[in-house]
Image 1: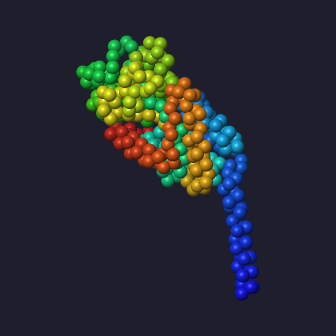
Image 2 (image 1 turned 30 degrees about the vertical axis):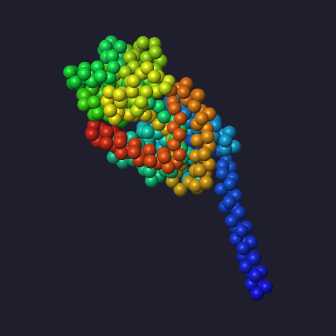
Image 3 (image 1 turned 45 degrees about the horizontal axis):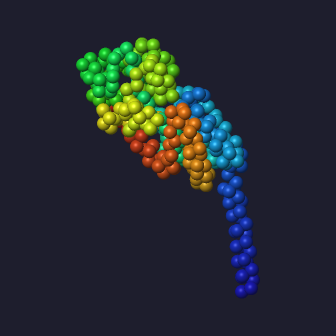
Length: 323
């Protein structure tokens, strides 16, 4: 019996010691720098939000979080790179409404699956668009726009940053819900589209707040409404498009995703650090026309499923294809 107890004790000690390396690895994450992939060029909405967050995560996690811009193909190149990276917690994707939701309906084949290839971590930022018109059109509000469009089908033009972009799909959703015919004029990116609107070469655009709001305040553009479900506290004088077109809502959003199979401990710590950083970032976000998107892992997963269904429906109804 004594020998049996000794053997069992030795076995228990060996098992305990054998468990330590795995536990140490879990507790040690992160033990080296983290790469935060942004699938778009520097300077845009996603990149700015990523860099602001990276500073906070670096302080919270004790390891440098470096933004890695992998632009191209509507965000596909960078998103695929993240999906194919090791699932060890050291590669994180700043996913967006376009890379994770809209692209599903736009492309017949994607080199990644936004649901199966990724684990949602946490929301980061969201920003409604703003429906703006050139002042020369004399359109006072959304109701006047709808009346004009119905009286002159296909006569009014709306610009976008390109086929399948969020500014394009916002216009298609508006057309569908308002029952109007507007002529889509795609540009190579958002900047030239906005410039063309300010110059009066096109009539309308669903633009980002940071881009168009200065023009609205200086009288170069007429703000008709924001695309959030309700009015923004920072712009109470500007109605929501949904006040005239029930059900219309569109917000550009970003969130953190990691390759599927990433250890749960790393996901949970990254989620906690991100959610704790958002209140600290709120004042800076507000200056840029952004709002914290405080969704945890499960909430972000549910939001993603709803967004995929919504925008795939819009794409199919408008018969939009990219490839």
